[in-house]
Image 1 (cartoon, helix red, strand yellow):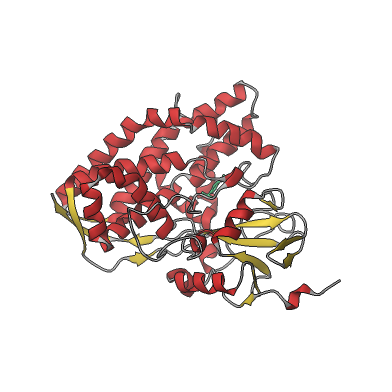
Image 2 (cartoon, protein in one colour):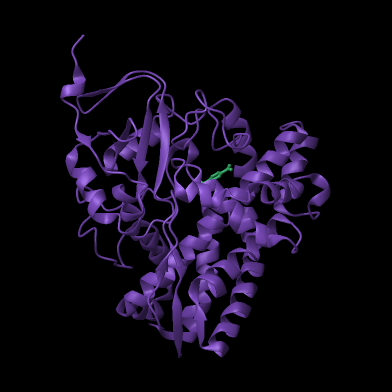
Length: 399
Ligand code: 4IA
């Protein structure tokens, strides 16, 4: 057989180093330009950073599977740090059955029912922040709002919610290598995991909430009782940090680009599209892995069976082959087609909730805030999967 290893593009980049995570964009460019698929020698894995290849791989779930884990760790070779998610870390037919339940519970009709509560909470929070004038965009807005509305909608108790962010930090750092970020995130894993699991049972959930609706799928025979608990865990894993980072990144974009904020204030119908542009430009979820189920040729390079592939969603989002002036933040751009929600059978099932949160928050803010001023240097919160801020000191200039 021909030795294809001589022909493959190779890179020594470590996508999980602090240096990379602090400013990934020059590295994204290097990976895109290295080739359609690139061997990362430090980890012995493949990576794809161009829009076309990332998209094609996400759509081809038969070749690029999820059941071996969507992090660096291969569940066939080492034990997962927690029981695998039965939706994220699953393939059809299991995935088809669990996904159908969550698709229904998060349907457009279900989201419409949430809108009043999400808008009311956004108005309350924004009124308080405008009064306060100076605040931290991460703690006082992105975290405060994300820890309120979605957990309320799921139907979990208020007390103990301080466990949700540490749990999310574990989940998202665990998709990367066992580096310092992973070690720090998992240092206190036991009690946090126990609290999360205690909130996933039927007994812990409010009647009528999204969590209890999962258990109603047990009564109709679609799921087993333990499977329902596992899907509540998926809500609590996927539904909070993602929106914290997304809302925080949005605020950061608007603080750095005041002219874009003015455009939004003059055309509130652009709010929806502006959030898509934030997701393209500063993707809260940067990367995901797949594992090959057979040998496959990608643009003339042969990938072996059972190999890990790191999909650079955030690099696809700035691929000049796909986007005009990709490094310009432009709220008027047609940004749909970004890869931040993924695509294909695993495309984000909760994306309407994320959009609702952003519309509620930025709808309230555009009415009351003329501009945001940075009162200090924002600091990054490094994570193996997520990109976002630890602190974002802001002052509001009211309307
Ligand atoms: C789960 C991709 C990310 C948003 C995500 C994380 C965890 C789970 C699903 C999605 O635990 O099911």
